[in-house]
Length: 271
Ligand code: SAH
Image (cartoon, rainbow, N blue to C red; front, side, top):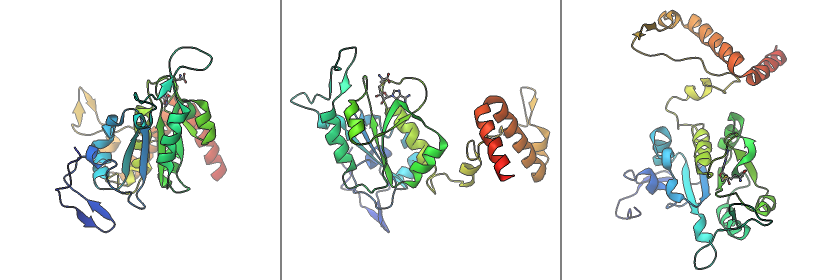
């Protein structure tokens, strides 16, 4: 998989591209590209990456060097002949805890040489729930380091010592942080200019304002006896805009009273 040296590199300005590489081969083998957003992921399962991030728009953008991905195998930092990374919880109880003296060096390695604008995040059910403002702020940073937990989680002292921010995918418990890390990276990377083909779509969709998105339809015009709403076939852009807006408002009011209240408060402020 790493046998790429025979392939000629093509230089496009500061970015060097080997166009034949697949996303998995693009990870962590090249020097950092200055100014290109990067995710560094500390994980016991580096082969889980790029995972779904290697597909479709995020995968193409990774190939095109619009963002970068590097995994740090936590096992590498393990202790002793067996490269132990975990131990039993102090005070007793079920499961295992990732050791501070293993995570510490991994974090130091990941954060070495990063800019001041480089958040350090632990994926954790205790964390701040992921939302679009978080993704927007991460997309504006130079990159992010993500710690994927396993077992019962990580030694608390690591979180305190490095001032790690905790972020949650939602109010449920996963077996590891990898899926949450991929969700966070996906939602962030698609905000990087050029990643989405049609830049407008990121601005219009759910959460760009505070509203959920209106419904979508496409051909055929009739399916299972159901027609596409007539207004969408009218070609009347003004009416279509109004209809979509009304639908977005109705959906938000009905499904997400919390978002609706925030939206109303903002509209009142701006008159
Ligand atoms: N004992 C912990 C759960 C550990 S689950 C508790 O009850 O809080 C193992 C790992 O999965 C965690 O260390 C974390 O990295 C990840 N994880 C689990 N649920 C998550 C969620 N909702 N969001 C983000 N990461 C999660």
